[in-house]
Figure 1: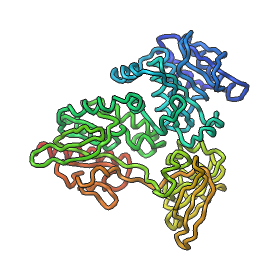
Figure 2: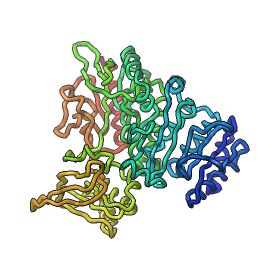
Figure 3: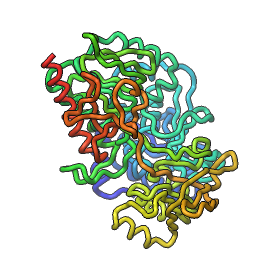
Figure 4: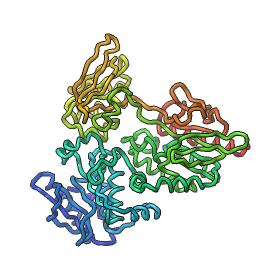
Length: 516
């Protein structure tokens, strides 16, 4: 099952086990069960502290649990955790075996203090790059708290269960049989949702902080670069972010980040966070900004958070990035995660053999259509303009695919469904005015980005597109307020450009401070 290179790497990891662990397999006669058993045999052969028990009694088969010998397993994998989930498997092995997690003591105490019984089920696809964050979070909770159980369920293996629960997007998270969340969720976010008093406690803690020299709002590439450059100047630096990493967390392949030939969004986001935290930076995660009051009449600038907490600073750098643009047509919101999706890499495998549409003819839309064409039965690509806007090489590849239909001058007017899931969409021909309905099961929206600047209206000047207007130094219309990244009027929304703009805004903020 595992090749020699992976076995060598895994052997080195398993040397970190501090206590014996047992792999408890619940198998059937399927080919997947044989493949799973082969994987477990390979793992057990790599360390004397790992034993294999093939007499498991789990309801889902094939599956396996990771446990301490003689104890019930609290971590289960229903499916073979390869692909993006292989790291989840390795961490589950190590943490069950006593290897300490890389989590701060406050978070560990919060997990151990959770009262009640928690049975997590996380439905994933092995091609989903957001799913491992959820799986690893609930697995760690199961390791630290005996009242928590977690199971990863591969939707491709347990397709009937996916159909029965009408799951149309991953990760899909269930707690004690009820839907708990969908999409990427980190450990802190899950804990905060369970610990209802956490928000109020954190708001009180944040409100008590001393004023900052520079406060960065946003934790994406621009915000991270700004934080590093500010911290290196030796000034008091804070970062407040809705989720550290920003939209990079939703990006799969990154192949144009200079000096790094290839990486993935979550890996880059983790590296950004580690780099920032290597300096004396106060990072406040899972905090959404609600309002900005620029400095005036000698008063400090104020950033009010949705929790009610208020942070003060001599200078502010806004780097709140952008989000996926929505179609804003009837049915889109109703059927989000019920057939309407925004990440073809994550959710594409759930539509295997089905008919889908892609909205948007730019690079992202055409790339999505090409990827999906290898999974689904048919792809209909709808483009509002009179021609596709993607690179010529992508268009050539798209037109070579036999199961793709391209419709230009098409304005999507409605997403239709049966009340539970998508069953089609309606569009209008922009030239003739004729309307049509396409029968399908999934819709992938790929029509660009919207800046996250709604909270800034009235505080700084915004362009007609809602972008923050900045000058060559990243200065906004408000004194002491700078901005960088995809939320601004700076052209070309690229990770490397956002980082450069973040560094520039930080240097400009420092220059502003020393001249006050």
